[in-house]
Amino acid sequence: MGNPMEPVDEQAIFERDGFRCVYCGATSQLELDHVVPLSRGGAHCADNLVVACRSCNASKGNKPLIVWLLDRVTQSP
Image (tube, rainbow, N blue to C red; front, side, top):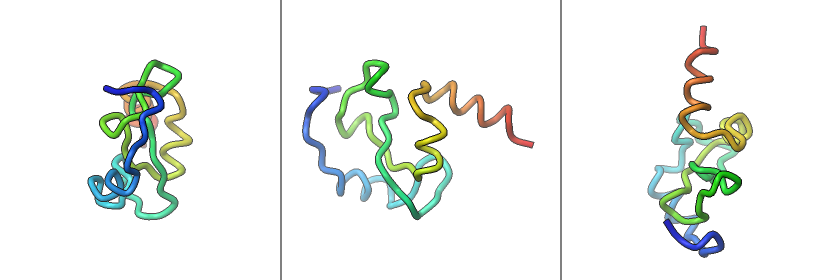
C-alpha cells in the first residue's frame, strides 16, 4: 500500500469518489476514512482512503470494513 505517513492528495480522493459518501451516498459532512484502519495495520495512502460522511465514519470506527457492513445489514429493519 504505502508508507503510513505518505502525503495524499485529498482533493483527488474526493473527486474519485464523486464528492459523496461511498457507504451511504450522503453529500454533506464529508471526510476521509481509512478502509483498513491505521490501528489495524492500514496505510495512509490513496488506495486505503475513501470519502465517508461523518456519521458512517464514526459508526465504522476502527472496525474492519466487512464487520461493520455485516453489522449494518443485521441491524437494518
